[in-house]
Length: 294
Ligand SMILES: [Zn+2]
Image (cartoon, rainbow, N blue to C red; front, side, top):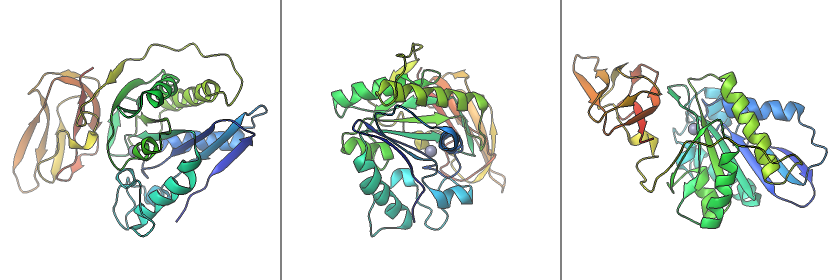
């Protein structure tokens, strides 16, 4: 039980906490944070920076989204319990011992091994307007990504941060079990700009691009796992592509059950395909595509 944390202390100031691998098969966050751990020697740090490149070590070494022993999703286990499953205990440890000391927080996710997505940054809306303004500032540092923010969803690292009124953002990189150089560069630039914006390191105020932004009050919209679910186990054959704009009812893909039945999944609503399943074997309930209204 536990994780490696790297801490840089520079006197009084903000305390920024960043982690990767809340899910074990997401490698962009761990790669970027390990690069910083190897090289970063800040000379004029004001405040504290804490990096945890791999939060969910057991899942990471299993190469899976969730750790195999209890199968629980760490990003649905917050605030966690010291007497719960291993995943719940990990959530409690992180929440109570680390997150509680942060003034700002970022969680670097990705599509994971089974999916590909159009990278975005997001935060929780509708809790506290002051917190939301800071989150907006933090998110805009990641200006190579579009911004997709929605209401509080229970169990997430960001929900634990919201309960503590700690401004927090998350990023979602491309995934597919790989690390795209473009995503890594965008994440790197965003992190550096966030350090400047929060006053942790000196630097000129960054000139930011305008982000394509979607802020929704609909809890279902940003809950990625509830869309276009496979109705049974089988082989998935996509009929659309990442980035495509689809109309309501347009074909998303077929699921072929191994015993011969098949179903054509159609778009639940019009939108841009922002997440698509790449792993062709699917289990009942797996989300095969997510559409954004922008
Ligand atoms: Zn994730």
